[in-house]
Length: 329
Image 1 (cartoon, rainbow, N blue to C red):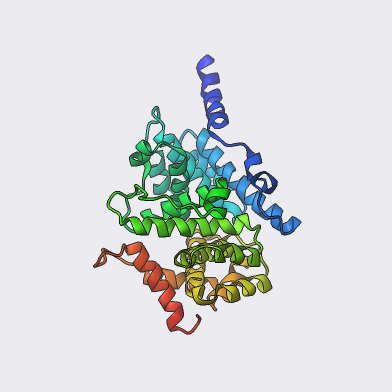
Image 2: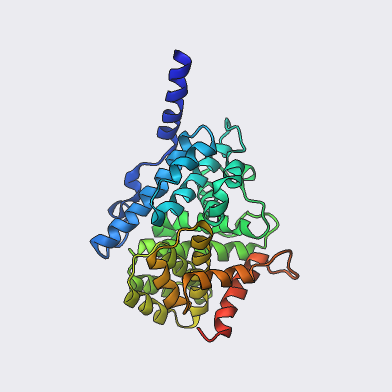
């Protein structure tokens, strides 16, 4: 009898210990801009859904147990739940008493369709666990591993907003990946910071653009790319607001289009396309979501690339150049 009771108590206890409080997702707690009641509800629901996915992973006996519950999340928000679950499994794998292998099994299952969001979720975990544990969870895919730094950057800007957004902090000699290059780690972290700034600004397109414009010029391209990704994937702005953001982006429009293409690819791969995605890709890419996703798929490196520029950066440049070549930017 006691064995059965403990089997049920331990997952609930693990969830309670590991899962952050839902209040952490409230805009007033975070000090984020509140553009409107609708935008506030959207962003807070995204945060709650992320933590719901995290909680499912924290208490799941196996990744399959969590997947069955994740699939019940509404289409618009399901990707955020998978992102949170990936963070949860990564944290469990990184713990000293963790059995390991949960994250890899999650990726081998339904997490594969959400691979971009899953690796971003791993980056959230990297921001929360000791760096000595990173080797247990850090992605190894030579192309997609960089997305973990997007997640890391988002986390830092979301929870340490004053330092990373308003004070524009950048960590010197970021230690991962050890085979570098260091400069590229900074750039992908900035993409994550830009993505978080869409939340910090409460989806107010002009406010987000103004915040980005306060950063040094050499950082703006990646920040605009991240904000464009978030505006497309998460939504929260109407067509007029998106067009205003596009106008404000100016010379960084190719990067906004690149971020939107990434977002479209993630939505299409997971089968989670919703109306606001179509509006955003029409504004930023001049095409439907499926077409924008195809640009990302077609330009993706299928093997090692020559030179010192990482394959992930080559991929981003190819996407941006594609939109320039078709006259979109």
